Length: 443
Image (cartoon, rainbow, N blue to C red):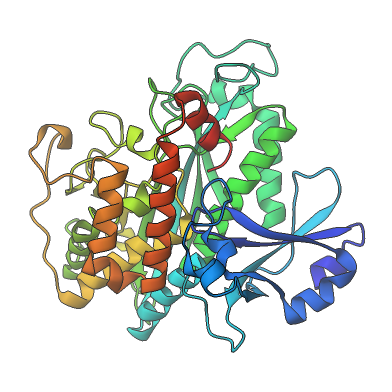
C-alpha cells in the first residue's frame, strides 16, 4: 500500500489475472477499496481463466453449467500495486492469481503451474535464473492493409527491414523513451533494444532474474505495456507470431541457467562443453519439444512462423552457438553457461512457456537423460525429428503426452485442450483478413 499512498491521484485499480491465452482478465475497482483488495482479494468465476481467444466460455466446459460457474478467490501476487503508464486517467494495476475458498491454488491458473515448477526446483536446492527476449512489430493498422508506421520525424515509411539499425531505433525515439520510462515505473527490467529482421520489427531483452515467476510477470506486463504505449503514439504493437507473410515472425526466446544453494551455476564445469547437468537439461528440453508445441505455438497463426528457413526452429535438435537449432548453448564465459530455448513465438503465454521449458529441463535432470550429439551447420538442411506441423497435431500431441502431465496438472491440460479445440473449430471459419484482425492486437 505504500506506493498507492504516495499516489493520491490514482482513481481506479485494475485487478488482473492471466488466462490460458495470456490475456489479462479481471475488473476495475475504485481506489478507495484498495485496502480491502489487498487484505481480502476479489472474486470472479474459475471459468474466467479458461475463456477462448474471443473471450467466450468453452462449450461443454464442466466449469460453467455443470458446476454452476462457481467463483474463485483472487489474491494479490507479490508484485503489489503498480502504475498503468499508458492510460490518460491515473490508474493502478493489482496483479492477482486464483485460489479455492480453502486456500488451495487453482490448477487452471497458469501462474500456479509455474509456481509448482519453481517449488520442485527449490526442493532440490536449485534456483532457475531466467531471461526473455521480446520481439514485436510496430504497425500502422489504420488502413485495409497493415504496414510500418510513418517515421514521426520524416513522415516517411521504412522501405525495408534494417537489422541492428540505429537509424530505425532513432526514428521511433519518443516511443522507446516512453517505453523505457514505463518499464521503470512498472519495475520491468528492460535492457537492450535492437531493430530486427522484419519491417518495423524490434526486440527488447529483459534481464536475467533469479525467480521464474518474476520473469514471467515481467514478460506478461511488458507485452501489455508495449501495446498500450504504442496506441498512445498512434500505432499498434503486435507480438503476433507471423503478421507479415514475407517477413520473419516474432519469437520469444528464453534463456535460463540454474544455481545451487551456494549460488554456483550447475551448468558450468569450467569448459565450453558444460556440465553433465547441462546435458541432462538439454535432453529433457528436446524430449518435450514435440508435445510442448501447443505451448510454444498456441494459435492458428503460430504455425505460419514455424516453417523452414524463416528464423524459427522446426527440427528437434541442439547445438553450441548455432541459431538454426531449437535449443542453443551460447558462447561466452563458462560461469555464465546457459540454455537458450528458441522455439516459442511472441504470442505465447509467458507463464506456460517458462513452466514448460523449466519443467522439461527438470525432468531431464531428474531422469539423468542424455541428449543426442549437437548438430553443426544449417539445421534446416539436416534430417531431424520435426515439431508438429499443424495446430491440430500439436493439440493431440499435448493431450496424449505423459511427459506433459509430469509438468502440468491434469486440469490445466484438459482446460487448454478444450480451449484450443474450440478455437481451432471457429478459426477455420474466418477469412485471412479476419484471422489477422483476431491476433494482431490481442496476443
